Image (cartoon, rainbow, N blue to C red; front, side, top):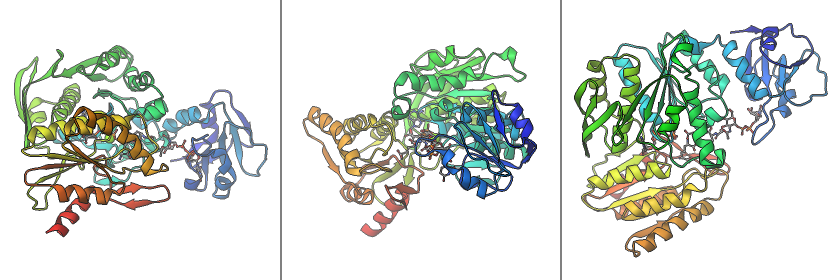
Amino acid sequence: MSKQLQKLIELLPDVTVTGSPDRIIESITYDSRRVTPGALFICLTGNKVDGHNYIIDAYDKGAVAVLVEKNFPQTIEGLTVIKVASTRAAMQQIAPYFFDYPGRKLRIIGITGTNGKTTTTYLIRQILMQAGYKVGLIGTIQTIIGEQVLPVKNTTPDVIDLQSILADMVTQGMDYAVMEVSSHALALNRVAGCEFDVGVFTNITQDHLDFHENFDNYIEAKAKLFRSLGSPDSSKYRKTAVINLDDAAGEIMLKSTACSVISYGVEHPAELMAREIKVKANGASFEIAGSHGRIPLNLKITGMFNVYNVLGAIGAAVAEGIDKAIIMPALESFESVPGRFELVQAGQPYTVIVDYAHTPDGLENVLKTAKQFARNKVLVVFGCGGDRDRTKRPIMGKTAVKYADIIIATSDNPRTENPEDILKDVEVGIKEAMASFGDTKQYEIIVDRRQAIQYALKLAREQDIILIAGKGHETYQILKDRTIDFDDREIAREIIGEMR
Ligand SMILES: CC(=O)N[C@H]1[C@@H](OP(=O)(O)OP(=O)(O)OC[C@H]2O[C@@H](n3ccc(=O)[nH]c3=O)[C@H](O)[C@@H]2O)O[C@H](CO)[C@@H](O)[C@@H]1O[C@H](C)C(=O)N[C@@H](C)C(=O)N[C@H](CCC(=O)O)C(=O)O
Ligand SMILES: Nc1ncnc2c1ncn2[C@@H]1O[C@H](COP(=O)(O)OP(=O)(O)OP(=O)(O)O)[C@@H](O)[C@H]1O
Ligand SMILES: N[C@H](CCC[C@H](N)C(=O)O)C(=O)O
Ligand SMILES: [Mg+2]
């Protein structure tokens, strides 16, 4: 894929060009480390470093043009410098054009919400595939394009990577892209050019306040997805917002869009409702009540939170005109999402569950579910990420004490922070809650995650449930100076083996 630089410049308001605009651009990137000959290098002013510092590196690697928002006083032979007010905004103009607007050639379903995005994308993908469509997927665990599985850095990639992935999906004949849309992506407009056809709102609870600063900004970021859906008349395609009305912010999402809406819920009246819900260890079952009458559904996945995820997925499928005769069996045969309520089975007489709960609400939901099935004690091993929302730490500590009998707080990707400091924040909540339980529960702080898991497994008795939360599918632990291999599922299996 290549484009004339002049055409890219024409897309941008108020540009100053130094050097020749008469060049062919072979690729675009915001990272000097990924520059290849013929590239346009876009300088972003980042949180950690300034992309403008890498212009010479980019030139040395063959960049023929740079897009800047700061003055670049040097003149370099063969390098065109394009100055704009905001390189991020300019990048969002250029990327969809550069990749020939792939968002217009696919139907795109975007899922946003604090929890449940990954799960819901997998459910929707399964339904669409059963309906005979070719489906690409973008999200926290991986990007999938047909048979190809690609690793990911962010839940929602930045605009160039995202448009490039969508272009690959078009080339490989995908009909759909089902993608997670994080609040970071909405706030930073990484999703420019996506032209969503369906937006799903799962829920919004506390997370990411380090980035959004307050809850109103966080809600506002999520609402952007629904605003982008516009009115059905202004679009060449049909567009639908699928909204969980049991969440207090559901109404806000509803009011943010003028397109058709399919609402869902359990408590508040909605178009798609779950009735007669039974949440059992081996799966949840319920009836879907809607204009079509009642349809029974027996799932292999469990937990009340998954009842909601399934309703959201049904909403998206109905929006896309998929027949219920396809939707229901597709959901009933759905096995699991890696690292979401995943059982570790190594012949032990107690239950070990690895789950990705890393927010107060996620942890509460998963612990409530575990407690529902527990015939004996519930033990939880969990932590909170470094360089992330600090205010969620004591809340998660409290939640753990509220639902579990034995609480083991440990490290979960401390990143640049001191793991001990993170755990001190968690312990504040633990101690507060312990007092209200008359100190009848036991808690431990064990910095080393392996040791924490080992401790829990040693304490475990027959029919206990051990929930190892926070890392789910992750196969690493991010420390200050390095990232080490770490997979909760493998480690638990290993320790159980060693204890035999
Ligand atoms: C806070 C945040 O979102 N940061 C994102 C941001 O990085 P940044 O602004 O810190 O970048 P930087 O490291 O300062 O670098 C500035 C610029 O210099 C460039 N550079 C840097 C070094 C070099 O040698 N050469 C070079 O050109 C960089 O490529 C960049 O363009 O821009 C990068 C490129 O788009 C993102 O990968 C990065 O996400 C980081 C890795 C991150 O951890 N983000 C998390 C918080 C995030 O986005 N999470 C959401 C939500 C997850 C969820 O809960 O679902 C997600 O969508 O993943
Ligand atoms: N609908 C839901 N409501 C509340 N909690 C949920 C819901 N669905 C899943 N969870 C819990 O949250 C965890 C993460 O779920 P999932 O990966 O589907 O969410 P996500 O929104 O993709 O998360 P992330 O923001 O990290 O991408 C699960 O492991 C489970 O514990
Ligand atoms: N998408 C989330 C994932 C958190 C997972 C948890 N293991 C952690 O590292 O905090 C984030 O980047 O905040
Ligand atoms: Mg996710």
